[in-house]
Image (cartoon, rainbow, N blue to C red):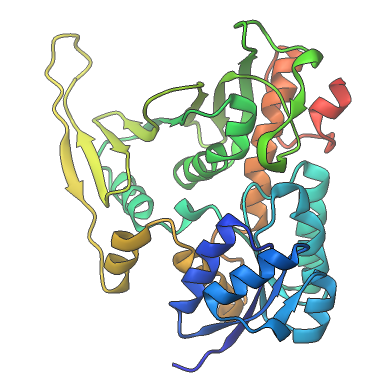
Length: 358
């Protein structure tokens, strides 16, 4: 298959390797440009992925205008997501942007607005939106295998809460929306290292340029418009992380990298009922087997979903709207903690709540 889409990459750090590795495994795309402010990073990255020096740029705007890519992968740290995304969209270039989408809702709104105005597609790389394991779990729930959906729970790994929400939390909050739809409100409790409610003193720059964050631990309760409830938890040093879907007649659990779902129909509401979990293998076809076996969290599925959105002229899987909805729940966590009450969505004030609190 001849390459049909010319792809440029902005930011040649760690996650960019995943994007580039996916691109070179997809015959329908080719990498036509790299941009990074560090010449040494460009040289090393270009050598690894066989992108010649004449396609290296230290300024992404120059690259956009010089090579005119069809798609840009924005692989910078979050603080640099908004500007290169908006600039690409304004030029009619489609964008696959890393998560979290932005630092605050003002930036997210600007990114969505640029996509709407130009018609160029915007997708956010929260891969569970296209992961065959999660999509099969959605299918099982829709078929009623655990009865009526009641509760979703995500347990996020090891990171401090403020940073964790912007990292693995972005994936899990997005996955919860796959099952429950849009959130109507958020109620949260954030504590500091002493186990006390956070105060403005606890506000600090998040790791990896994730903007203002606060809190070492967090329990976030989410009420969805569908009536389903959700809980997302962040605890420093937890040994495991995972995702659970609870219904009236059973539960599903997704944990680890294997293409498996765990299901139980035990319990029955009585304390002494046995609860046995069985493994439900996920049926994979063709390339899905190879991708999941080698690197389940590659960007191949997301890139293909974006291309499908382009070719069918529709909103792609995990769009800018989805990415913004996730970020809004994270911002609502702080609004709830500061106010001591539910934060009703959508948030009227699009500024970062911690910036206002300072």
